[in-house]
Amino acid sequence: MKLLARIRSIDVDPSVLPGDYASYKSRMAGRAIIFDDHKVALIHVQKSGYYMLPGGGLDGENIEAGLAREVREELGCTIELVRSLGAAEVYFDRWRQKQTDHCFVAWKIGACAPAALTDFERDEGYQAIWAPTLQGAIALVEAAVPAALDGKMVRARDLLFLKAAARQAVS
Image 1 (cartoon, rainbow, N blue to C red):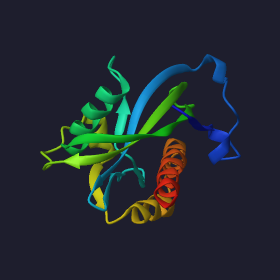
Image 2: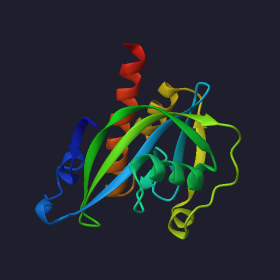
Image 3: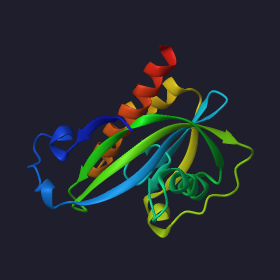
Image 4: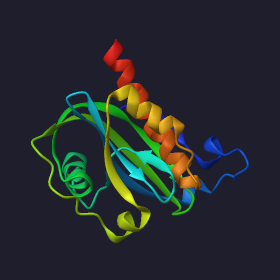
């Protein structure tokens, strides 16, 4: 999968000193831009004031299986992957972790069941929302002002993916 960007803390907040990235643990994750007709799924992280794409870290699965599991947990939905969009390496200082997020474009299949959020996700106030269009999703993510550094990095990552999908839709 094509690497679209490397995102470090200093890239989203110039006042932050760079970490010792060579010592960070690697983690793989899957993300998806999920369409239901023209609507696009986002997770509103209410506690920290930002929106993100559904998905998350792998639990020993391949990317596709881990992404499908995360989407079922966060949205209660089943998806069909349409195409690979690209990857981003995100260096999270808080966890001393280099996370490689692989992003896909996907379609929602059928109705959604209730989400099965973790305690962390409930505490953060995760709420699934459907933006009316891809441009609407971009506008929500752009307008958000995350309270914490992690949220700023997630915002940068997901804007990268959303704008890449928008460029592909135009070309």
